[in-house]
Amino acid sequence: MLNDVIALDKKYYMNTFGDRLPVCFEKGEGMKLYADNGDVYYDFLGGIAVNAVGHCHPYFVSSLKSQLDKMIHTSSLYYIENQAKLAQRLVESTCADKAFFCNSGAEANEGAFKLARMYFYKKGIDKSEIISLDHSFHGRTIATVAATGQEHYQAPYRPFTNGFKQIAPNSFEAVEKAVTDKTAAIIVELIQGESGVKPMDAEYARKLREFCNEHQILLIVDEVQTGMGRTGRLFAHELYGIEPDIFTCAKALGGGVPIGAVCAKAEVAAAFEPGDHGTTFGGNPLATAAGLAVFDILEKEGLVENSEKMGELFRKKLKAVQEKYPEKITEVRGAGLLIGIEVKPEIASTVFKKLHEKKMLTSLCKGLTIRLAPALSITEQEIDIFIKALNEVMEEI
Ligand SMILES: *Cc1c(COP(=O)(O)O)cnc(C)c1O
Image (cartoon, rainbow, N blue to C red):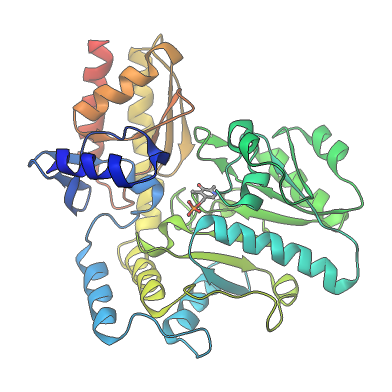
């Protein structure tokens, strides 16, 4: 089957992903994915931090099935029970007062930019600039590419919508230099995921929060990758002890069903009035049933706590491997179950390929860092499976 799928893909699918890894999965269960040829893989990437509750969690599947039997979609013209309840879950468990649902991370960030601009527009204050950080990743739409601080994503797509600029991360001097009286918002990832699991300095994050308060600038935290328990807290801003004015969420929120969210403090959220923003699919009955089921599972199974505990254990075991091979592994970093293993650039792609051959699914960021984002329900035995494979790979190269 794999070869047939490859042939169809090459013929009919736009070539945005190039030569993918030569595997086609048929079904999943927990941390495992089964390929069409019977090979069993361990999913340490979790669909890039999406499958927080693992594959086909029985409660998740039955929640979706029972929603499918009732209805999939109605319209934002009507009240939606699951949507209201998922907004309640997000608000009651975070510093936000209101939520809005959309379909992806990029769309959530777009919503955050619009909300920030609308907030100042309604106040009659001329502020529209949005500052983001170098090496950031905020999505693939034009405005989110304009905010994504990576030249190779930006170059082909100029001109952008106006009012976006990037600065070096962790430099407060850069913030002071870049901010003008037109600056509406600063958007950051507290751990930069795509560029290799790079945590922000805690001191810088705190100063940024204070600076934004003093200068009437909104602080937006992009929690698309770090949210929903990934870092050992429900959201990474809890780890940093700061409260954003707006934060966005997507990847794990629907456990694999597309949904994103813009969450904001009451005063900021109030800037959106009827007609100011909208969506066809966002927060429909099926997507919000998925979000509710994810919240239920995180709570019932203590998965946020498990993420903290197993994340710590995982990093400890990875650091022990690093100590054995210091000339090959340069750093182990991250928080909770968002983990980066930085290896020497000369061997990075070989390490990644060999892990894949050993049926360990990971991703390679910036040709340097092996990224792990497994299900938050991971056990010590499953961690040990990866550690064993990594030891073997280190031995072989
Ligand atoms: C994945 C990601 C996005 C984009 O999300 P999509 O659902 O692919 O649009 C935005 N920000 C961060 C931090 C991400 O990791």
